[in-house]
Image (cartoon, rainbow, N blue to C red; front, side, top):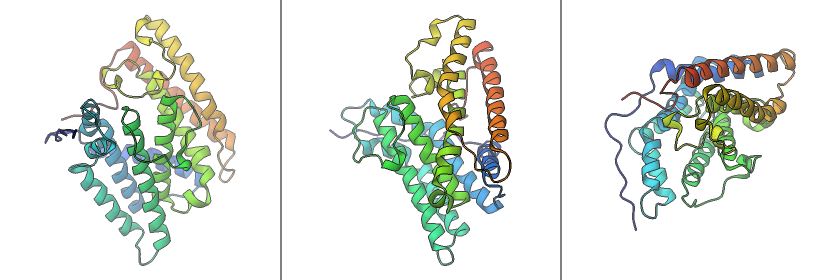
Length: 297
């Protein structure tokens, strides 16, 4: 039976310029800390367009529609994919590929152009695979071995695999050769740092209604944090968050090219402690009711 797919309303979440730039700049700073190279403005613009697309998908209507479609009778992976890639999301992706051709012209640097396009395609297929799988919908093809997660925990596996494809695409945008020649940098620097940040924010924002249906890291151990009083809940969230971030901190290995590795690891560690403290205060003490998944209509 075919699924009647709801259409995206005219008013959907639109990441503002400052949010798009902030997300792109975070990765650009990490890239600079890792490589010692400052990316050009046109590469940063391309990166910003990519983060704009991902923010629009996961904080806006496409993600919510995918939840609705998955509850229909006999949904297919194609039905899930269509909710993410219709209308504005499709146009945003087309615009990204046009920018790729501007930054890395096919007639001048065909190899670099191909590497970026390949990384974007890998991100596209990895996302489509997991967004169907987490909703219990059968997938049409297997996950590429390159993006196999290290964990058997389904929640951790989802976060890790999609984040790996995400940082791989962002790295290729700034440096196409890196994802081929320095693949370990992607897996030993970019992925661990994003996983630490993802884990910190997932645990700190535990209990938000908007996180309810999503596979966030605070659901990885089955603990009912909502049943605990405030102090016990915060204590347990910090304890469990530390348990899940430790393997990624241990995995983090900056190349020894611009400064001592341990110094940069300490910077990352302190930055995430500040994020954890800030967000625990906002979401667990003040009980702020909207987080990164809430957009404005």
